[in-house]
Structure formats: C-alpha cells, structure tokens
Length: 101
Image 1 (tube, rainbow, N blue to C red):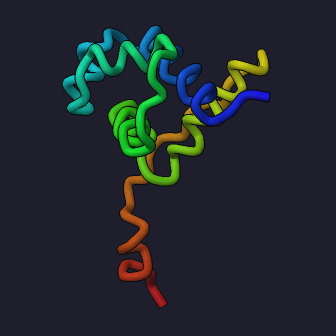
Image 2: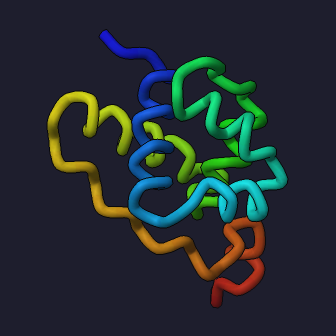
C-alpha cells in the first residue's frame, strides 16, 4: 500500500511532465529546483509545508491539496486520475456575506 509521500511524488511527477519544467515550478513556488528534483526522484519527501506550496503553485491550494494526492493515488493504482475542478471564484469565507436572505 502506498503512502501520502508516494501519492504526492506520483502527482508531482505527472504535473511536471504535463505542465512544464521544474524551473517554472520553482519560480512559482519559491522552492529550489534541486529540492524539487530530489522530491521527484524520491531522495527526499519534503515537509508538509513544502508539499502544500508545490501543490498550490500547481493550482491545488487549500482543500484542493487532497485532490492532488488523489491524482497521485489514481496514477499509482493504474486508474484515470480525476479531472481537476476549476478553483472557486468566490472566497468561501465571504460567501455568507454575499448571500441574499
């Protein structure tokens, strides 16, 4: 059975292959390319904060981080990864403010 580190690494590797170079991810996340490469290669798992920063730079911030892990899980299990949902355009913390009674 795979663990969260393996799920994350599989999703990260897929994202780097699909979306472009590690250099761009490094720029967008503020995390060094060599450190990202170590995570992709499995030499380092990265801290939870690092993994969340990388996922956020790929568009999986907040609650969507779990979706990123699910992509990795599906890939490792040989299933089609779930389609990413577009991020919400409404800040959920302000949703009640804008609701009409």
